[in-house]
Length: 346
Ligand code: ATP
Ligand code: MG
Image 1 (cartoon, rainbow, N blue to C red):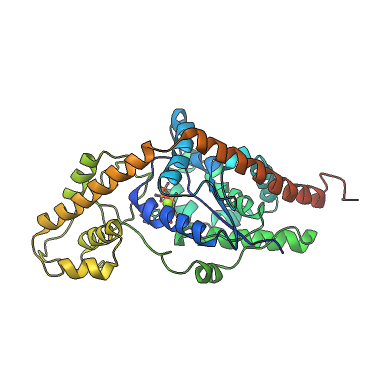
Image 2 (image 1 turned 45 degrees about the horizontal axis):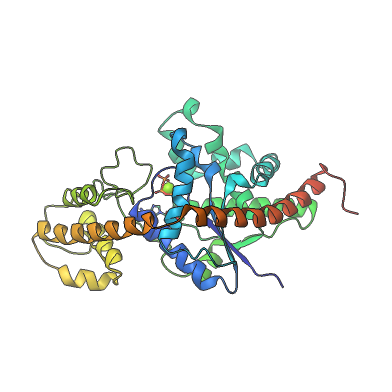
């Protein structure tokens, strides 16, 4: 029996944040390490997804390679043959399958995607790209090409995973068994366990999550920030006027967020960190503790990043991409035959 495939990726549109690092990258790497015996693990850099919203294209290629370096610096074992890391655009079947799936996807179906509604509402119709509208279909292709069963998704992506299951079932019902239908969202949660809900908040506005594409970046700690910059952002983080530290996200979102960040940086259980500061009144002193920890984390991480070797990384990307092209092209051919673009199999 072939091993089940786990698939996941992080969009390479800008430098990653500590939210991406602790909320996605570290759990992803832990998962890859712990599951690679029983599963094939596909980690991909969704470079085609990078410009569904405007970006600086002169920086994109470097950003893609940089993200691969970040994976390596964060501890991804590049010498494990069951773990693949690849660039989406190097496997052209993604674009081809997307077009085919597009023609079986309803306009209304895409229009109902809440992420599209959120991201498009602020810019107006003419500045909203068709790519943004269409990107859940590309995401479906990303998953279905590799017969992936398990795709860890945050809340912002569950609707897209449901769509992937729908389009796979629709195509299978019409054309026979073309695709492996990924597991349902509850089954995904069961398989991956906890940690799916972690959300680091923006330091300047702790009522929203920290996001790498945030316009001002004032409340965002990027992995590429100098430790000094990051310290400043922590020290000027928005808190409250209660003058008492409690982990209470509803009433003290800023303080609670800093407690959460500190626990992650120290690798502690949240309760342990919270217990240490509970009831204290000097926010400045507390912020200083968090700032020192952020400074140490970034200094260490950036040293590991500098130590990564591009030749090793490019070799790994190349090997994975070759293997992935084989799998993806097999799926694509099955679909092309089913829809009549290629002669039926003998
Ligand atoms: P963008 O602004 O481009 O949407 P983002 O920071 O929200 O950027 P995504 O590319 O949407 O990042 O998500 C990458 C991964 O990081 C996802 O698994 C997502 O759940 C996770 N993630 C994003 N932001 C946070 C956060 N603030 N805390 C924890 N995890 C996060
Ligand atoms: Mg996001």
